[in-house]
Length: 323
Image 1 (cartoon, one colour):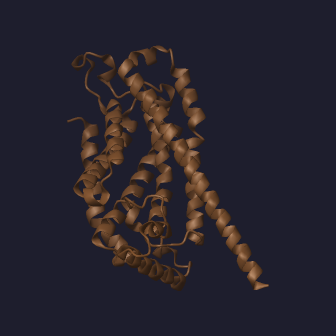
Image 2: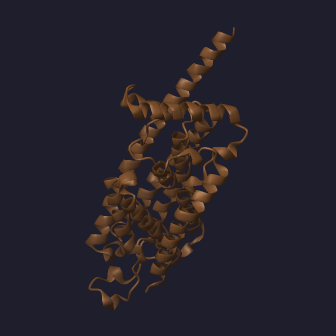
Image 3: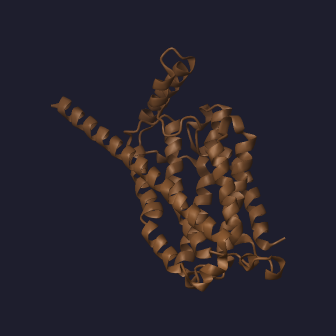
């Protein structure tokens, strides 16, 4: 077995242990809201998201349910209880609301994103030859990410009623397929096409992993939502601003630089050696991903502006009442 695939297997088991053993214990120890969650909510908590409530606050979800719904009454009680806890605790005890439940996704994002930055700044072999450069360190990074994606696929399938999402399944399978172009490293004689002789496109594959650095702030947003924190809370506002800035820097601001490097590779001998399959997979996936990132950035910016405007109006109202 190739060494990269051993890293994939190791990564998979490490994330399984984080999900099933470490995350629940840390959450129970450090987060006041964790113990009151149901089993399904805890599964969602460990997995970083809440299917069915994506992008919605508790208040928005309650409005969709209607005041006569039993779930409405239960969630209304949960919301009021959580807000009371927030007010009672105050914002000085930040450890109670910065959730360790996202450690699986957050650790993956920090490790993979941090290593991607290191490679981009210091790996001369990859930066010198962006298509056929020595991919050893990039392969380690891709292998860690692949293990995480396989772990996530298993969790999605095992907890389908709670976490199941066809779009995530499609995304993970497509990403794993693309990652194989970097991980494959057999001898050229074993394949009819030379492009499969070693991992290819290491620079561009690594460049894409930098986007993971925005994930911790996205994760924290979900935990604020499930704990019922109002969007006007200072911690929520600060996290939202950090999420918006980080998302823009690592997913949008880098687009011109990325495609400048892509364009400079067109027509070169190294580009032609790739073959049609890898060329199409590279370009089509890049364009599709950046279209999605641009749409998400627009939604994030619009939501951030709406929340900041509402918060500003609320403060002005409070000030006018005080005089």
